[in-house]
Image (cartoon, rainbow, N blue to C red; front, side, top):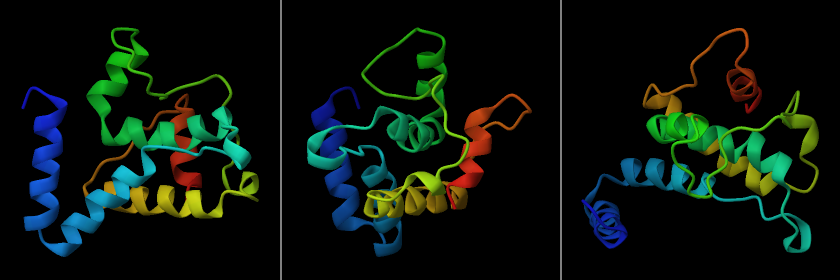
Length: 131
């Protein structure tokens, strides 16, 4: 596949032909790749980096690695110096969004995809706080 249209066509085909559980799992990941848009359309970059950014990095590890090296930038958020210490205390207005993040994390774990864990990897620490 070389074009966005080809990828969309493949996704469309997948969703109408795949096992319902597989389709639901992929939808869970796709739903968590965007957002949060914030209250009244005012985005919350810190929240996005600490949730969506982690899901993106785990779902697309090669892309995340290129982004971190400065090789590619497509508007995706993967890392930031503004990491939160914990996700759960931050969600008063974002419970619906958090459910998308948790669903995506569950599916990615079932696919045996997790961030690389080392003592300096804040993403890995936050990944575990997404429960």
